Length: 272
Image 1 (cartoon, rainbow, N blue to C red):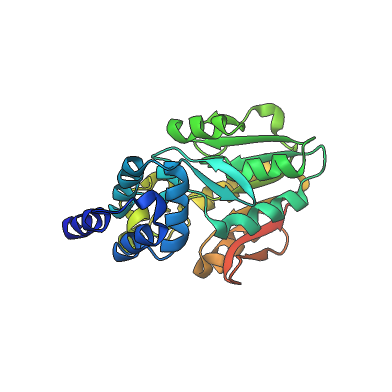
Image 2 (image 1 turned 90 degrees about the vertical axis):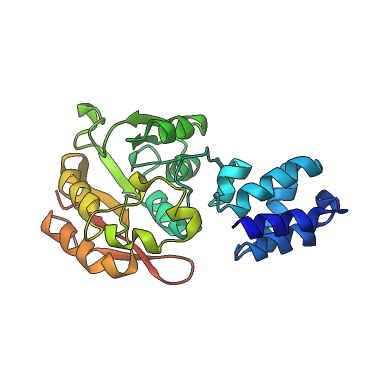
């Protein structure tokens, strides 16, 4: 990494990177950034023409720091979402989950975004159904502050613990991107995820489904009959998550695929 930082500095000698997008892209590509051209464009925009600022931003990215932490934002389902350093970064792979949840939410219904992080899914629900009541829960105070800054109402606590009793039996949609990475697979994650993003938002225990299982068991308390539970899981966890749902009184689970057609979650209706 020291060599890569030195190479980055060499690329900048005699060049105004604010006006040389290809130079920035080359630095990022050399550091292992897969989408170097797109990332370069975002960093150049964030620097607003200040070459010194851009150098600092690129240096941060070269170390592996998530792009969204550097620019302070990401785009999710077409919405701009502020992302503070230390907060889990919303992924495009979660967009179909958010859209499916919005489809199931009545115009004046009630939705809960569990483990909301920066609040991306909650924001999609609120945008799609302005008349609905949408609340998030988040155990990490840093993430909760970020979600509130994005305009989402957030209660701090583990999973459903902070939900008020008045919501019991009234929730139309319960949705979440919960931690589901098996503990043994944490070391195999991409560098910007493994070394920077909060383990609390990623580690799902030995089999990856420990937090998911707790959410499934607790969800009948909150859902109205006919309400929906939608959870993101890994492609190899769909069968396990489906079994958990059926054991908890849900109908036949539906598989949610991401934009690449890969299984990315499950949804099921609560029979009540």
